[in-house]
Length: 263
Image 1: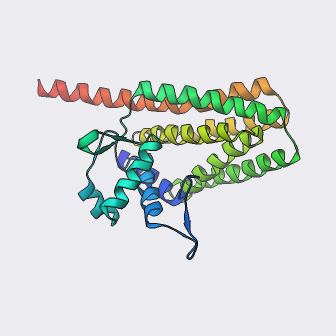
Image 2: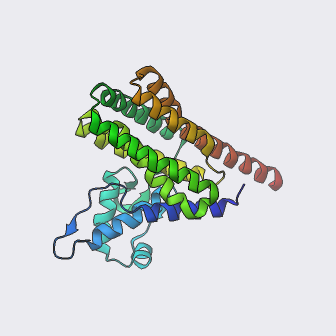
């Protein structure tokens, strides 16, 4: 196993290179570049999702201003947007903090994502057409190639893997024809991603299992086998919760050791 700080840094690098996570980014019409506020939003979002800013951490404006080189007003706007995303919580007069993490919260997120994604996948298969099938096959092709590259060099290609993994899941449900399903699924995907990246701090992801599941999901979708699709997809989604549960158990075990030493 790689040291936890190496895994954590890899996770942050992945998220920073991924960009805006499909968020609603407003561009400056003159430069066709993200605004200062959008750039700050993207960086803060990546740092929260990647675990660089840990759950429960106080987000002090002066420190953030130096770290991200933006004004206090821009930071207030950015933190308000992140609060709407459920990644930051406002503490009244005390300012802002990264949303705390807990196993109970992850179970809720995982179940919600599973319900949304399995339902959207079912609708996509039921309404399947050539365009949806082409998107899914193309997304899987990129994902499978990225999975092969990660086996050779995980540090160099981890960004591709996470990008194409997301694209594959989006392609799978893209035929549901419901913008609200897609919207809320995106929120839950990012929330579950944050916990997965926290779990990366203590252990690597079971990539062989994921590769098998991705192929099974593709095959079931193309075969219009709804029962197999929903079963495999549900298992695939809940794996992230199991990883974080192991992460929590590792932390609790470490705390018990520390208490014994103090005695």
